[in-house]
Image (tube, rainbow, N blue to C red; front, side):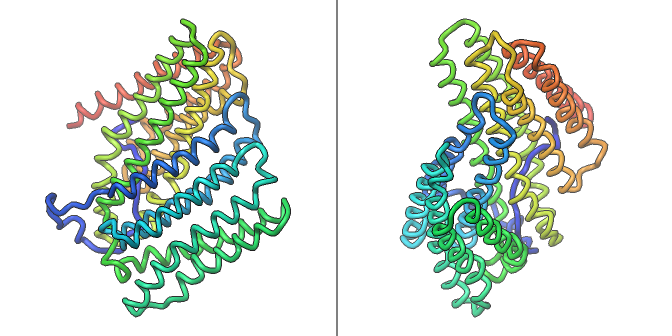
Length: 394
């Protein structure tokens, strides 16, 4: 990765107050928010079990489609806390603790028996949205704003999610699609009105929240390696674990060394000039794909550690190398959305995507250990080259 990496937040109103605040006044994520993130990552880990072993195209599709409603709920909670939860008040605890329980229900539902538990997934989403609704209605009343938008965004969609729990598969999925389409259609308007709701989105807080969430997801990747190594206690598995750790560490190092620096600066600039669309995209849609890439890569690494002496099955190789390719593609899209020069972005994004795809193609001809070692070596060269180029340009 490179100097131009990342994928982070936004959705802010044109307001330069974030840049004007002094470091002493900078807001940080509360313990309540961090607690919520840990619960949410538990959901991600449970859902990621679908990608272990030799996942099929259907497994990948199910992971993405089930993850998006949960991701959007996380975004809703993030935005609510960012606008109205400067302090972890009793009201915020009263809202977020029950939502954590609904996320736990969703995690328990997304098992291999999901069709029989789809009703619980729908009901949990309904309850979570109903819990958020009063916060928005109270603020709309205080600010003398139109209450109908939050009533539709959280209220109507909650009704749809709840009603879906009474329907059989596959009709339940159609209702979910309608509910999500309504939320996505209204999401742009919510961002545009953020300055009237709570004084504008706090860009620094948003950056920290998404950055910390990515840290936790990287941590889940390390946990996957540790669990796989503990279950397959051999020299070959240990060597593969070491190479897998190098893959995770290199991606994390590049992301947080270069990405975080670029991200916060870019969000301030986008916020100052009122580029709501770019803020929204880099805060909501694009990080979704970034997390998918990391989780998918981790699942592939776990499979490689389990059987390092044999070629990875195509599904596992796709999870591993395809996850890295998606990681680079997403970070490239984020950098371009920030307005970074196309040539500079392609210098690291294109090799990151293309070489990872090539490794999928050769995965059937090399052992899992060698595939992971090749991936680690490639990332070391790519990141080292980007680092050298950055130093030369400084």
